[in-house]
Image 1 (tube, helix red, strand yellow):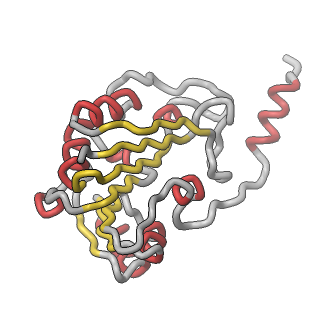
Image 2: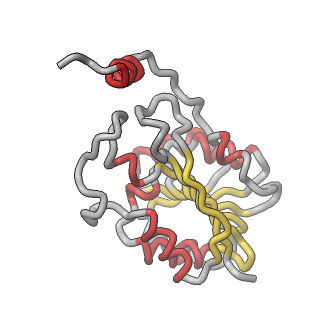
Length: 209
């Protein structure tokens, strides 16, 4: 079978050298952040802390959560002014559910860790003070089911991962107002993904005053 022009282009794109995204807050997040000076921020899925350090540098009092003890050890060194909590993202401890955070920032990798969307939404609502916001930036659930040639891998509805509709429904039914949902092309050049399909999402929701 002769290769088509589309196949050749896809092959070349798949095998070109990759650039790496700079560590820290992605531009898509920085552009959507509110003023953080003197505000309390809960950072979910802090990983190794580069984004946590950026939030602190913007003047926020940051509490960061991650389920990985190894990542937290690195994060503490990268963001020494932040407080860190080892916990599952859909089972936040009671100490974080006292309605004291102006912003909950859920970073990339959150949805992979969440097994119970309703429990996750309950935790976010409990952490936020009235009028506070959730800003959730993550990989779109489709990226785990499509390769860079738009070939399906597995079943989107297999129940193994939280879907986008499940996340939004849980947030809305949990008592928050959904302000914005964006499906975006991939912004990380190190990730192989066809830009014709969504690669990332941004969800903004608010706890009622």
